[in-house]
Every structure is written in C-alpha cells, then in structure tokens.
Image (cartoon, rainbow, N blue to C red; front, side, top):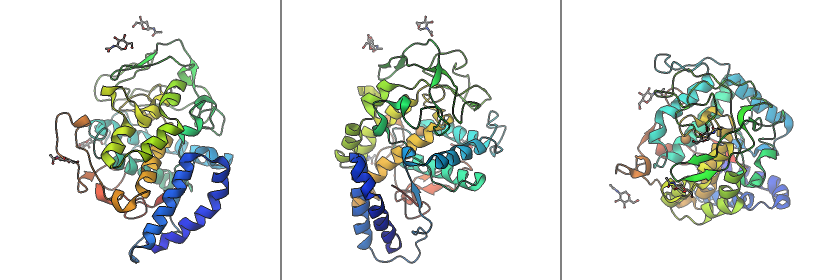
Length: 384
Ligand SMILES: *[C@@H]1O[C@H](CO)[C@@H](O)[C@H](O)[C@H]1NC(C)=O
Ligand SMILES: *[C@@H]1O[C@H](CO)[C@@H](O)[C@H](O)[C@H]1NC(C)=O
Ligand SMILES: *[C@@H]1O[C@H](CO)[C@@H](O)[C@H](O)[C@H]1NC(C)=O
Ligand SMILES: *[C@@H]1O[C@H](CO)[C@@H](O)[C@H](O)[C@H]1NC(C)=O
Ligand SMILES: [Cu+2]
C-alpha cells in the first residue's frame, strides 16, 4: 500500500488552503479521513502486487470545483454514451436505444435486491465505477466521475452549479406545469409541488430522450404515467424535473451529512441512516438527494438512473461511505452487515463478503469483499 501514500499526502497539502478557505465541515472530515488512511497504509507491509498507484488513481472531485471546460468534457461524454449502441439483449430489454439505457435497465432489473439491503453501498459503488469506466472507455473521457456535495447547495439547489441550467450545469429544473404535491408513500412525506414538473429546457440534456420506465412515478404530469410491465419497454419522453428545495433543505444539509458520518459506529447503522426508513418517516440523504432532483425518471425508485444527475448524487453517496470507512480503516474496510431483502422483508440471511454483485455486461462480476476498498482490488479512485 506504500505506493499510494505519497500521493495522498501530496494531494492533501495541495488542497488544504482551499479547504481551509471554504471550511466546509464535510470537506474537513474528508481530509481527516485521508490522513488517517495514509497512516494506516504506512503501517501495512508493502504489497508489490498492488495495481492502484499514484500514477493511475482516479481523483473524483466536486462539480462546483471543476472548471467550465472540465464540466463540458463530462457532459459531452454522457451525451456520447447516449449515442453509443445498446449492448443488451433486445428481446430482454426492448426499450434500450443506447449504452446509457443499458445502465438504467440493469438498475431497474435489480432494484428490489439492492436497496435497504447489505449490498446497497457496494452495488452502487461498482455501478458508478462501471459508468465512469464506460465514459472513459467508450467516449474518450479523461476525467473522473464528479460528485454533487448536496450540503453545499442545500439552501438553494436550483441555483447551484449542478442545476442552474447553464451550459456548464447538468441542466436545470423542468419548465413549470401545474401539478400536485409529491406524496412519498410510505412514509407519507409530502413535498410541495415545485417550480418545475415538465421538460428540462436548457443545458446539455435539454434534448435528451428518456427511453425506459417509469414504474413508480410520483410526478403526475401528462407523459409521465407509470408503464405496464417491467419498465424495460420503449417509452420515449423528455427528461422531467421538479427540483425540491424542501427535500434538499430537510434532508441534505451539512448537519445531516456530519451526523451520518460521525454518529454511526457500524455499517448497519450507517447504511440505515443513509437510506432512511420510510416506515418511520425518515428519508435520509439518499432519498433526500433523489427527491431533490425529483421528476421523471429522477424520483422513480426503479428508473432513477435515467436522469444523468443520478450519477453525481450516487458519487456523493459513495464519497460519504468512503469518508466513513477511511476514518476507521482497520474495521470499516472489511465490515458488511444487513440482509438480502428490502428492509429484511421477508426475513432473509445476512449479506456476506462472498456475495457476488453482477451488473450484466456493464462490469465484471465482483465479490462484495473486492469492493470495500476503493484503492485495492479492481477499484482505483479516491475523493478530493
Ligand atoms: C435481470 O436479472 C436476471 C437475474 O437476476 C438476469 O438473468 C437478467 O439478465 C437481468 N436482466 C438485465 C436487463 O440485466
Ligand atoms: C391533483 O390531484 C387531484 C386529486 O387526486 C386530481 O383530481 C387533480 O386532477 C390533480 N391535479 C393535477 C394537476 O394533476
Ligand atoms: C398522511 O399525512 C397527512 C397529513 O400529515 C394525513 O392527513 C393523512 O391521513 C396521512 N395519510 C396516511 C395514509 O397515513
Ligand atoms: C445477522 O447478523 C446479525 C448481526 O449483524 C446477527 O445478530 C444475526 O444473528 C445474523 N442473522 C443470521 C440469520 O445469521
Ligand atoms: Cu439505486
């Protein structure tokens, strides 16, 4: 592990002034996690087999810290993926029109086995890494998957660099259409109807065609009716958003992220608080971020990756997990808890490190144990 340590330390001194300036508590915690991790790595024997080095490690950064040209390189790569041919079986997934849709299809297909389960964190970790690799390998993207630090914009997501609708954003809110409040049932939480609801009108994804789903669309506007069947049939429509300031403010503030990282001693408590528990009225940062995007397919439990902002959201989910892990690497780089059914209903066995995560042909199948460390095994990235 020594190979990576100099990089972590060099990176630290390089980012420290900016962090000190912003004094974002989550950023400071990420810095502390890197320091702890570097010390931990120093204590390990050299591993000559290690393939993740300072030369090839991918450094994921916050959207707002990227230059305008870096943001355009990213959104251009996503637009490219939307033009690449589907590689899934057209009989199984008749609605897929491109490689981007393949990612949506694989998530739809496995939704009921990867949420509120013990594989939630590692499944989505591999999924985002596979997406990052697809952008790089199919679309010539040289950068990393950016993340959306929800807490930096929790007071005003619509004017954030992610959703302000500029050419350097992930496109903005939907156009306004009269619509009802979003009732999240369960836990019977009502999000007031926002200022959008209809098609996204500006930014890189204004002409994007969403092909799959929705299966459960809380947004009841013409054109976003849930589809019969398994969500894999062709249902071309625009990308609709209804960005929720209430979801952002109530569930994704700095205190929410800090509490999540600092108050959970084991991964079961951590993943439960992160995902919330609809049965007791808690959304958590995970659903909180999804419902900040809202709309169709953003608010669809199954088809939500059909909104490209999904991958910035889930990179932040993964970053939060990564910070939590690296604050206590000796314990948390090997801990897996939880069961294999949603909220353990019906009761099921515990998830283990030997359970395999498979993403069809998006990535090679991996044991959960291979995905617990982002700088060992098949993964090779860190967050700055
Ligand atoms: C859905 O999952 C099943 C196994 O769980 C698999 O056989 C099938 O190929 C998957 N379909 C897609 C589109 O990934
Ligand atoms: C809002 O909900 C009510 C009651 O379900 C329904 O009658 C009405 O058509 C809905 N309005 C819109 C704009 O969807
Ligand atoms: C949901 O909450 C509202 C107001 O808080 C309440 O009137 C309604 O009865 C609740 N519905 C259910 C199904 O619990
Ligand atoms: C699952 O793990 C928990 C600890 O996280 C333990 O209490 C429980 O007995 C285990 N369940 C089974 C079925 O092994
Ligand atoms: Cu998911």
